[in-house]
Image 1: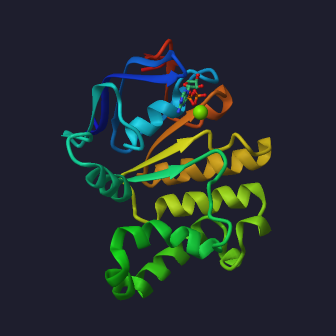
Image 2 (image 1 turned 90 degrees about the vertical axis):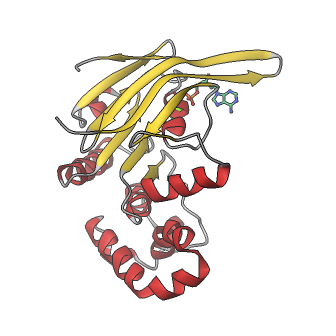
Length: 233
Ligand SMILES: Nc1ncnc2c1ncn2[C@@H]1O[C@H](COP(=O)(O)OP(=O)(O)O)[C@@H](O)[C@H]1O
Ligand SMILES: [Mg+2]
């Protein structure tokens, strides 16, 4: 049995829309073990992105807990959460969220710059450049280092985004509809890449509304009425 790495218990999240409360998560719980590839499936608007953001400490729950390696993720200050996120998580989003003025290599290096800060960055620079080059080769982007996002295809942009997510060797990769903006074939390529990373040990949590996409994972859970229901646990 593999070890528990990330655990959400009874998580609630409500948004205020004008005067109205929108109840999105109503006691969602999920356990992720080291080395797993888990898909969270649910209809559009069911709260998948909200849950993924809570797992990665991008947002705070109203109620409930998230623990990472047994530690309360929301126990510390906002800057401690930023540090936690930067060190342990890689994020991949549907619309890539690359910085348009930076080239491929610079986009990938960004989380490493945040991690090391200015001074250490200069000390570590050549090592990190080598690491970025390795990651980009793994992503099949060897000949695209100097391209800007608008000079890349959708599939290439998403591979840059995955490279950026991997640069700090995250414990968990969180992917939000990573193939949602890609044609079927390009999407399969991205899923193949995620599967290969998982086979090498990368823990992955991916959200999707598409059962075909979810089938890339080992295990799928369903988000219904603000709670997680297991499909095949
Ligand atoms: N910042 C926000 N303010 C108000 N409502 C929000 C906010 N973010 C999400 N919602 C609402 O919460 C619900 C769940 O959103 P989301 O987690 O993005 O769903 P999914 O990713 O499953 O499509 C939706 O009804 C959405 O409109
Ligand atoms: Mg979403």
